[in-house]
Amino acid sequence: MTNAHRRRKQPDIVRHQLMDVAARLCLENGLHGLTLDGVAKEAGVSKGGLLHHFPSKQALLDALSQCCLDDLERRLAEQLEKDGERTKGRFARAYLKVLVDSQDRPDRERWDNLGSLFMSDAGMRKHWHKWLTRQLAEHAETDDGISSVIVRLAADGLWLSDFVGSPGMSHARRELVIRRLESMAGDDT
Image (cartoon, rainbow, N blue to C red; front, side, top):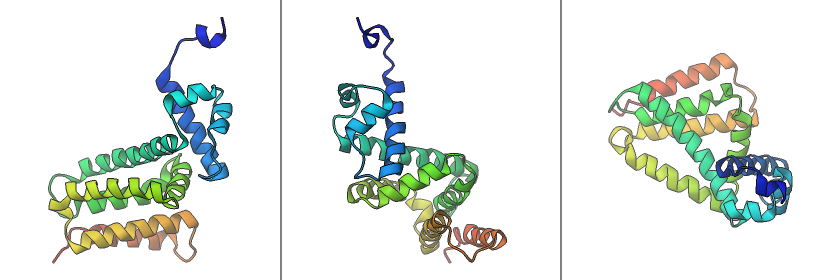
């Protein structure tokens, strides 16, 4: 009997390990350089074991994309909880806070890099579009004004600026921009 038959099955751990390896390989080789064979080999599982969890490369990428969106949604929920109920610009402020505060997270570089890879792929952008459409519909009561839209779009730009290391903005100036955007989020007059 092989070790695989004697060891205790832990599908959640294996699934998580496969996604971790896939994320690392995506960052090293790009989305198109990711192969199921490479993931299986690096994770130390058979290709059949990988296919049990992810029947195709697209299924693996979809799961990885969903993992990124779940992480973003969890962090947004934490910020929304802090902001209180039904205040104008609530979602825009939470979105801004999550994107600009990601610099302090130990796994920031990994998620930022994966996010940029996913935005470069049409299929992955569909996941983002669906997720954001759902979020905006859910928060329409508090975030339907133009100021909320401006703050959300500026947050995207600030994230991109941080990601690519755009020069010309000191830490103090960046903080002033963030404070201005936070105050602007609820101002729809």
